[in-house]
Length: 106
Image (cartoon, rainbow, N blue to C red; front, side, top):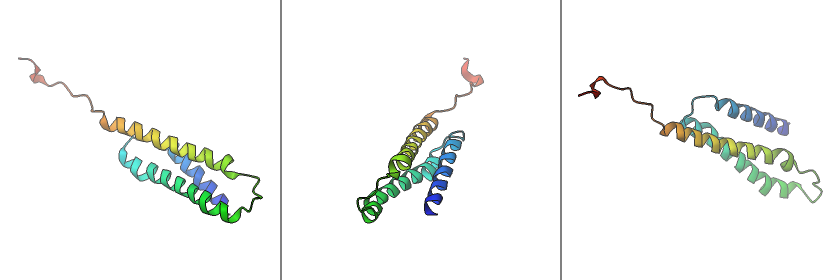
């Protein structure tokens, strides 16, 4: 049941990440969605590798779920976080073009 919940949450996060790339780019969205998702994914993985696997796997763990599900998910989350940060920084640094005023001529 927990595995299903984690998979559903991962899929929802993936869909949200893709949909948010179509939304207006802002650093606030990066700090409120992408960065926490990135940190939760990596902290969860470190917990999985550092605490869960050593306690539950006694050497008979033939199927490594991390190779099939977790590594691609971490790669996806990392790439989305970096890409959104770069795009939102560019959008924040880009100034809108100034409108010409009528006082330009002497």
